[in-house]
Length: 399
Image (cartoon, rainbow, N blue to C red):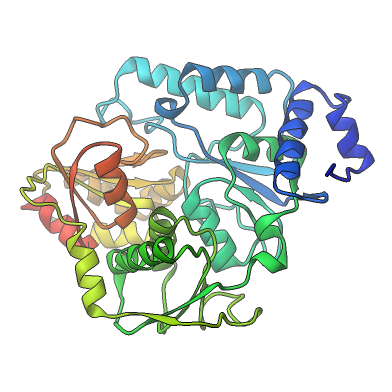
């Protein structure tokens, strides 16, 4: 089935708006036809993933350079974390050759008018859609947050399709852009108290594992009386990692929890034993911790304030990274939090994180408050891992 295009969209496909717009529309129409979209929809904004040179390589950089020859974004567009802190990469042990190539990647994005935020939390730094707005976001945790917590509408885009949407202002209308695909599919009842970023991450793993087991994607969750922004971003990152989830409904918390009929069938229950078992699975045996990190997804200003209060007057004895968005780091600078943290010997890793930085083989064991980072610490960087609270992470770094 061919998609119905507007005259403007057809002109882009015909090359009347330049080569980059034509290539972008070819990507989007192909995607739309594969998934049965009838038309395109205008997007408010875009979040692009696939930024680290470690993932892109020369082939990916060549694609970006070609698109940047005449491509210019048509909507607000921000960028996922890069493979290094653009200002502090030497102190973080990044080699010069990698740094040079990473800067080439970021420059190619900037040439197209993309705001080089280099953060996985665009919703904390200005790329904030309204409820019901269509967007085209890559980055699994941000997609889950946008769909679920904000109530915006996006599919889980790849890097090329997100870039294509940025250069056209369009995305094919299928998947989570449609009401019929936003209904809860399975009921989950939580019968245990859950508090803190680490515990919400563990809960995301429990529910994500269950979703994979039963072949469902969109849970309707009850039993959570309240949750902070930080707890929800941790939960989103975890359930997206372990369950492939791009949308959940949480009774009394997320904006669409009462919009659609509740799922029928069995109610799957999560109790304290389930959470303790999952937590034990995020602690490796024979662990020697020589690296501690907080900020996956990127740390908020509240989390940085908390770390500063815990580190005040102390010195770290292990490599300790706080990963965050550069705009948040600047707020921390002005508030005096950065000085306290850096005086303690900790390092900020703005623009990047322990998932995408080229640190494989540099450390033996990592402690972090993120269930997502535990997954990628093992699979990508081959570290042994241990999950903990932010307080436990600081204690480990200073003992």
